[in-house]
Length: 92
Image (tube, rainbow, N blue to C red):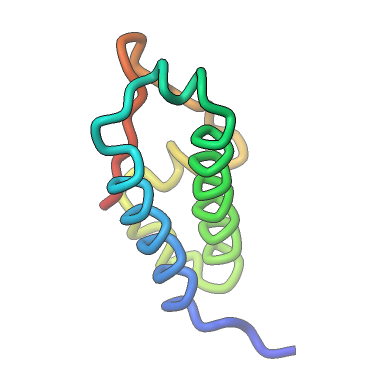
């Protein structure tokens, strides 16, 4: 089986980030907490990003390492860090 092109994983990451930035614009933590459908959509996109990062690391670790904060956000040993006052998603 041939390996998937690393660019396709990068596209998946970018696409999900762009979706989340638009989808969560003007939303609050209360929106996230109170709306199961909203929460599910956000979590699904985050799963896509995480899976794409893991697969990218397998097929092209040198590319994955070029993503800012890669080891802080997707490495199996990392911990999710959220500011107390609000959730923040940053896509580079």
